[in-house]
Length: 210
Figure (cartoon, helix red, strand yellow):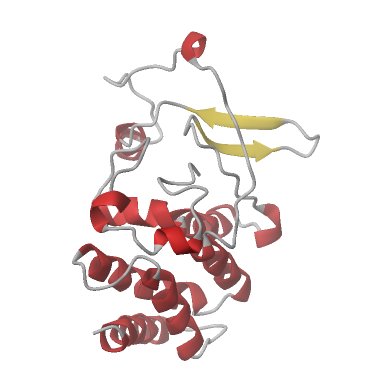
């Protein structure tokens, strides 16, 4: 993950973040909701959960790394220690095109990487104290059951309230974490239970932060 526009900011500094600030990502042009999720790094937490289910791996098999340049988008470490990286320009059009043409890869209008102009590719570990939404999502992934569903639903409502200036930036985490604490986790839920938990999480944020 890039770390978003507030990488390195303290919790106190992000108290003053406005919607206009949060949607201005340094590398990506995305919709408002996803841009806010990128700023809080909740998006990387959601991708952590997705990777578990898509590839059938455990939380211990996945590592989140902050890469501010947004050139490397994912990496796979093979059993011999070799790492294969997927690289490309920071343009959402590329993954959207692949989603539409998969499994074929087609010529595109997007720019190719110019390695002669790439000066640095840097990496750092996430600071979980400054990105509590990422930590929360990873904790929910480990907890299993309804936790991730509740967190995602609560976050969605909280972000929309933030974008409407009805909720402070740091309260997005408070709302998602509060919903996870308030709603009982069921380890092996059926679809009806999942939908009920989703609705309860949304209702929790609407009522708690009205």
